[in-house]
Image 1 (tube, each protein chain N blue to C red):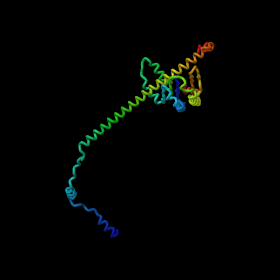
Image 2: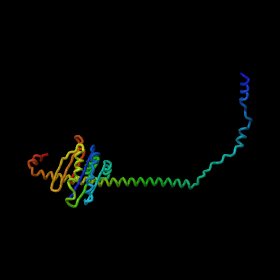
Image 3: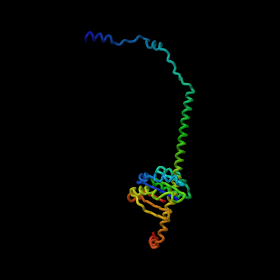
Image 4: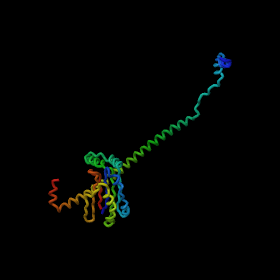
Amino acid sequence: MKMLLLAAISAALCAQAQSIDFSSLDKLVDKAEDSNTISLDQNQLRAALQMLPADKENAANLQHLRKLVSGLTGITVRSLEFDGPGKYRDSDLQTIRTQISKLPGASKIVDSKEKDEHSEVYMLMDGEKPAGMAIISA
Amino acid sequence: MSEWDQQLREALRRVEPPPGLAERILANLPPVPQRQSKRHPLVFLAMAAALIIIFLGALIHHRRMEQQQQQRAQEARRELVFALRVTAAKLAVVQSRLQRSALPLPFLRKETEHL
């Protein structure tokens, strides 16, 4: 069973999204089998893009990836993997859900529950333009 | 013109120096000592060595900084790839769930098939 929280934010809402407080998940780190925290700002994303290999076979994919990532101003991933069910409660994610839903222009576009898995996708809008996305998969 | 003015003019009148005065003064001047460097030649050598060491140090520091920047960029690349993989995997799960959940609604599928 895996719990994941991800926020991939671009442009205007980056500052607010990167200020999301993930500390409610800190207590779960000891119980997790695998824990990953990634936080890349715009400069780090640019540096990462420069390090992407110039692969001729996948040139089109790489170009698409570069275009996609160059439009982002930040990526934040908080991922915790557990060896079995019952190691966390849905309420552990509630504070993060609340923070995301309070971001300006945020709206939940997908809420899917199946057996023990619950996936949510939030779209962050800056006026009429999409400004980012947040995914919670638990 | 007053007598006082006359005396002053008399006292200040130009008097020519005796002939050969300048030559005699110059001849009596003490010889100017030639300027000699008090620094030992090794000092210049040491300064040159210090400059070379500073230059090499700066070069090595610059190389290290470049390497560190490259390492950070590599780390950022790994993190970016991981983040994108995880995102893509989770979005694929959500997408497949949405597709499956659409199955019991064949009429809706027909309606949206052309989209």
